[in-house]
Length: 217
Image (cartoon, rainbow, N blue to C red; front, top):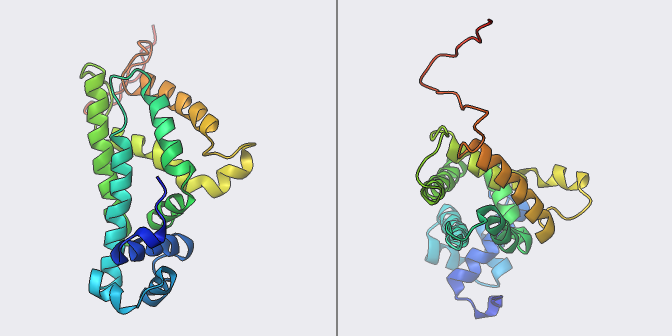
């Protein structure tokens, strides 16, 4: 449900204004005064509610993570087609929210402790969801569990980062529901074969063992 900015508290208005401006300009190029002006509030309220611009950024990150977490919790491992469900969730979460896409793209491309920390939090969420997916598949997997969360996160976040160069090479908006459904089907094929070992003709390498040379008969 859309909430008008006038219906938000002062703290929430500042946080939403910061989300928009950080997405447009980046954190370094956005002042606390600019955020206050965007929210229609006094600059003193930024310090009052968040202590500093860094505190405001932390609050924005928490809100973004809460939105992503709530969306992921809508997935039902027992519902049948997980990737189709993920596509629907992605369409609702990102398709109608270019600001959220822009914010994540800005933050994750920064070389800063804050961006690394946010990626770490996203990675933790991916690891949790991966464990849930594996449990839904009976608890068995041939995947490298150290790298699988990174791979899962790349499937979800990668298109956000690459949107500016991917979109010109597509004939439809890449976050359109039907486009996401097709991408999700491709992801499902990849995960089913690579993550859950459904393809018996291909054995995943054991990272604990040295590579073996093929024997010639």
